Length: 264
Image (cartoon, rainbow, N blue to C red; front, side, top):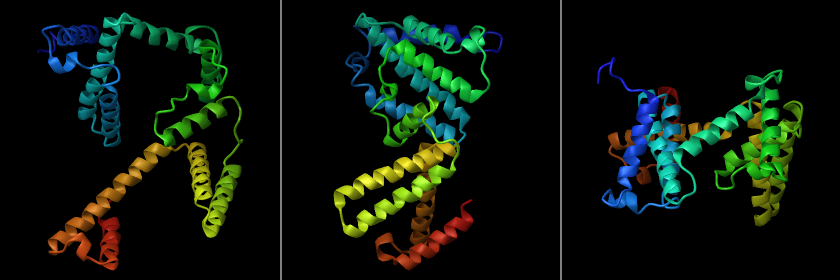
């Protein structure tokens, strides 16, 4: 395809819709034909994490492809919705278009805002009114990872003013929760240990939010760092003709420290 004949986004989106409809046709793909909203859930989650992985690695060539895979799942669900008489792709797109205009009155009407934080508070206020939900936190999905859910719950509460004005009391809360956990560990109260550990993690998420750090991203980065360093240990031992289970903690710890110097 030449630069002159390059198709537009609307044209390619329409083509994707046609392809999806063909795959679901009676003479289409047997695998695609047997899928349901429920059966596609794990694949949707997997594709979402592959998008995140591409972003983390700044692999933007891969990101283009992974976003396409994610869009496929959106179109797949729209096709299922259309077959079930529930909604179609046009209604899905119209829904988000209307929502964006409705929740940005400072852009599409004459409302005034005094910065990003004001926009966030306005967004939550508009959302609460339009959804007619009696509780603010009902809009946070329960099935997302607990770390992300804790972050969003705290964000929403902060959006209506339920938040400390600065980070100082958050630090104090972290130390308080850590001390309470240490007490329960010393006393051997297994059930309370779990509760206090959860409280400590929740306070750490709050600290992350105050420091403008996404806790899920931060933890994912640390896990990847640990994985790279441990792979260094494993490879180094292999080169020495040793296996992990035949090596001492001292040997592995020395290689760990070496990995920190060499893997920047």
